Amino acid sequence: MVDCSVPGPTRRRMIVYLPKDYYQSQQRYPVFYLLHGARGYETSWIRKGFVYETTDSLFRSGLATPCIVVMPNVNQYNDDRDFEDSRFKDAFESIFEVNGVVETGFMQDVVAQIDSRYRTIPDKAHRAIAGLSIGGWQSIWIALNHPDSFDYIGAFSPYTWCMSAPSSYRRHFYSGMYRKLKVQFQEPPKGFYLYAGKWDLVRPSTIRLHQILEKRGYPHSYTRYPGSHDWVQGWIDEYKDMLQRVFKND
Image 1 (cartoon, helix red, strand yellow):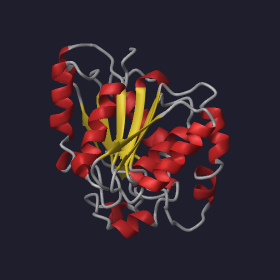
Image 2 (cartoon, rainbow, N blue to C red):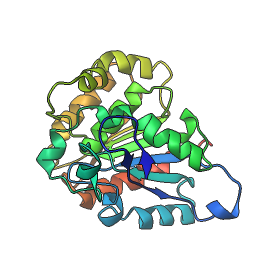
Image 3 (cartoon, helix red, strand yellow):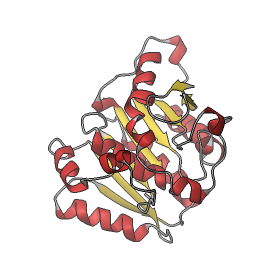
């Protein structure tokens, strides 16, 4: 549990995966922040995404750089009672509540507390953020609003049609994309990865974002997987691909 600095519950759940030798060494590690989507919460990547098995396998085989993987609950809740036991939210509730509140507090409520509790390397070069669907859209914007904080950004089928009501948080957080991209790519991130499935409902909007980045000469990659807006042949493989790309020069 971590304390919250924005309106909503006073504390928030997250799950932290530590490399196998974390407690046997004094080594510091990079951090990969992995966000869920609508209908998800902090256990989604474990229950459906096989994140433990994938991460263990890639670390053991030397195909990925050992890092800490953080899976926070990034749903917005009204208060502690509403948040009790990380209450399940259906898709429509999640979509209508992506309003920038949780995202605004992300650096303080999640990143800062992870850096204070674990042996991280607390700089841009050693942080990655990625998510699926709405979590992919949140990841893009968290990185846009904090261009000095993440060198690796991944969006797995980013769902761009969040429909929450206007609010001061939303206007501040989800605005000025082109201006923020220009700032972010003054010193380009080491990796900016877009993914979508062949039959994915959000593939057209993902391609559009890819074209925007391409037109402006912003270095990134776009990869199409054979699946749809789902775990199989989609988000599981996309996480596996990105994990093998990050922190390679460290």
